Length: 138
Image 1 (tube, one colour):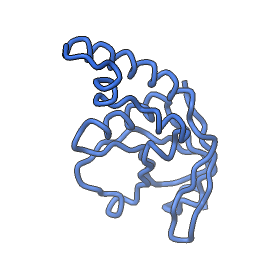
Image 2 (image 1 turned 90 degrees about the vertical axis):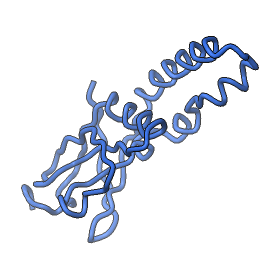
Image 3 (image 1 turned 60 degrees about the horizontal axis):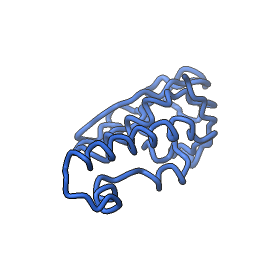
């Protein structure tokens, strides 16, 4: 069934670690949603790319949207440095000190997250769950 709209043709997804991390951070701090998107026609190895949207359109386009939390190891997702946590940990009143500390924590988290891409993910299809390998680029 290569080259069609059937997502069960997919065996592996290639993702950029940077795209996965950027999608996760974007969704945490913006009103839109960032996902990794795979568009038909589907075949054995597909590239999932960063996609930001306000309204979900996967039903109309046939695309598959994969949330970045599904592509990151759970321990990395759980350790995302929230700004409020930085403020509390520092017990600082100086906004610049908090901003710098949070930026450093976020940079360190991004580096860890880039190396914490999962090995496989389950895609929900009309025929039921379909597990595919995840290959990270760069």
